Image (cartoon, rainbow over all chains, first blue to last red; front, top):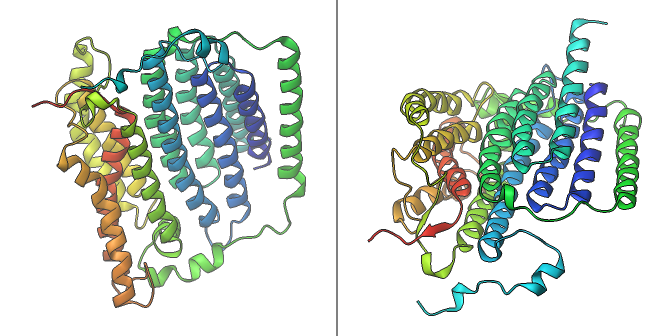
Length: 113
Length: 313
């Protein structure tokens, strides 16, 4: 259990590092998921420590994590859809300001059908 | 050193190594592929933590469905990703800060967690008999904290609303694109014909057994979604338009059924989402059946993304 506790802490650190340093938005989304899974693993440690009454792990944190995984997926799907829309309009996925000032985004939505 | 300890050490080292690979990979595509391997290994860690329900969810949703979503995104934009790496000084500062955060968290998890550990397992198990269920995790999800589960379904529907809203106006209500434009390979078509009957059986079993054993609506729904997605990717069936009333009904049916059962609890029992005595298990199975179908449809639509083509006439 202590092994996975250390593992969870390191995963959170790794995910945070990727989220800060990686310039590509898609890689930031992946790093965010690693950060999240580290947090979930921490819940797993708390659940395992709460083993009692004949069950191997406290069911309440387990249920929270199951809910959390599904919500994390929903957030990831939303982020990926936003990113793909940005890519479809601009032709790249840069988030920095210079590229935004240099190119006019394709505003196809504003044209009458 | 016992063999279990050696296994845990090796597993934790492997999980960390693959996570590092995912963060450090040069190409977005290789990062996503490592991420899928990472999710599958992490689900083994969940088995070791005696949480098989979470392990199934992590493997099906965390690695499988999320992996498919990210693979699609990486295939579309992977090689066109711009952006230079930040300067070395910033990398070092970020590395230092993250190492500090990680060591602080490690200190908290290893030393500072309260002893004896707080647990809700005894009360959860004590009331388990009144629910008619055998799996305490399902009891938490559908009896003790049913409101959380209902709201989580609403979150999925809201996410789908958000994703669909990103479609440009001219293709509003149209059809989402799934997979590459090239015709599918023979191997994919073969798998798409071979796997779905088996996968659907496993999904139904997973939903049914969830009442008493590890499994449930989420895991079953994710497997069902995977089966639908493989059929769609192999072009054996057409993706329905996002304006299709049947698809919208399928997405909403599960949460609406669950909410209806919840409101019926006001009349038949004494509170919202309370079950009348003796009818808890059948009502939960009914809600779970609807939710499994809705989760499958919602997950598949979230992976497919917003509409990109005009709706067929």
